[in-house]
Image (cartoon, rainbow, N blue to C red; front, side, top):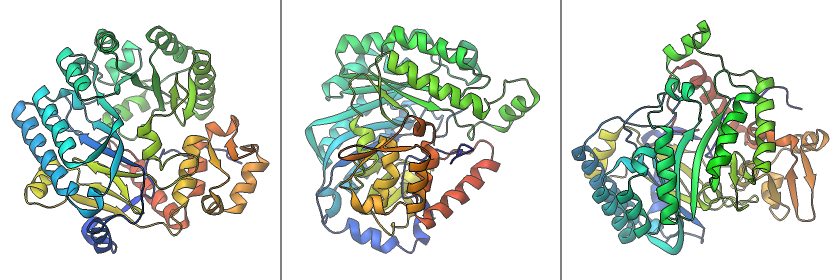
Length: 447
């Protein structure tokens, strides 16, 4: 059925398309925030801290390299003010949150006292469940700091995560990953001493010049560290600057693996991760416990074809989803601070609502590798000709209560997800792909 890999991975749906102020749904969205929720949902809070000490060349996120306590304190005050603004809206004040995620950027570069203010503000402005999964992202140098880890334990952070990406020293230097493997060791050791429930790392494959033997070197080192969970992404090349891409074209830097090698790496990775004791609990997500984190489950609608879980995004460039709308804050930090300090929500982008809201559950069922048969509306939103081709090509199989992706299907998840999209969302995806394909160094804030 599929002959070529769709070159973009999506983490949000429906897709953003309108500048907020020009959106025909602007007033409807604001009216939604101004009234109590129509129904109970599971909910996630996402906080984006955009600052990093250094810029990794592959990074697609909205990040800033400004340094210093004055910069961090200013952002902290603005973030806490945004919490107050959004937290007092009737819609959000009616929500209870089962998970909180700190992302970036590198939240761990913030001083302890700034982080303390943010945690205290969260407790003051939102209803967070006592047993909520709180996840904290960082980079190994600063996340290894005992004082920061002690603070995270004090505020009941259960899950810490940091970017490891690869053990290959040549590639780490090429990508400008400044944290050392000694930093990785220290961060891991200190976290284990403090008893965090889960230590997660981000890894990448499809690296320049990578083959199965090179992948095996990373996997052997991962076995030694024995992390609780691993998010193992295939590298996208959109964010690399033009100079990097020209060096690949000239042969100074090894090329991106071809599609045959991509599939060989993906299949080897899934097989070897199983040997190492990891369950492939979601697309690109591996866990020792057999359970996907609450962060991913709620970000992607709730799991098993559910579409209803909602996300409140806080911070510059943060994304959220409420009542059928996906939205994004402005990624320009000075503009973000200006708007919030003026008492305005810093909204910059808005999606259209889906024609069938359950189609969100259909799109994200690919992330969880299955959909429950009870999700009738979600199933019916998938074009019947697409469904039949999946069956004919051995990409789906039936159990007593679910439809599940076969092992063969797991190399085609990006293609399958796009094929669940409503017609208009297909058009938005096609336009976005055209933009990122021709613009070197584009930073999308993830797709």
